[in-house]
Length: 238
Image (cartoon, rainbow, N blue to C red):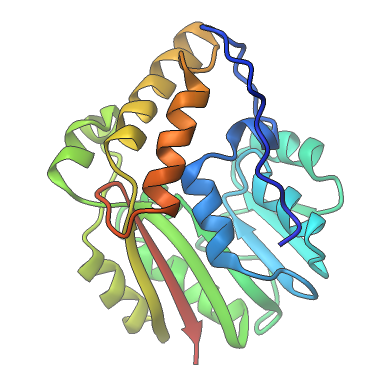
């Protein structure tokens, strides 16, 4: 795939938080890239580009064209610094400024839960519109499990979690054929996300023992065949 998962062996108690590709490439993101497969020659639309980790990986792996979309101008600036070879747009996921049937692959990792409540189908129909026949949508979103909700501090303020059955039904309802659905990520993922909220926003640092947590999260996403944290889905425009 053209992406190396390398880490430094050095660990300190507190390290400054950074949005670099290497720092953010943990278990969930590695699983996301694994599901994307071969980027070579593809036209890719990444909805909710965040720090630009997917743009970085797709360009390095030989994607023909990468378009990154986000509503947050700061996120777009960060992503552009990580992957200057992509094309960046400040736009809504429910009104995609792209031509119909113009994209081979759409990714929407941890996006669905952030759009306005009730707009999920509108977003999926827009994605269906811009995909070429046979094109793929790959998405992830928080799973609605009791521990994943309890340990998500943002859930108490409206951060949505979904049942896999609901994700399946709205994908089919919007014209997709669901090719794969997975649940991955466990308690190491959930506890490290609690730490991320605290240390990123209060101390501006990485969580303590980040490298140790990253190894555990990698195991949860890449080696185990079950989970409680994240729903992944691959859907095809038939």
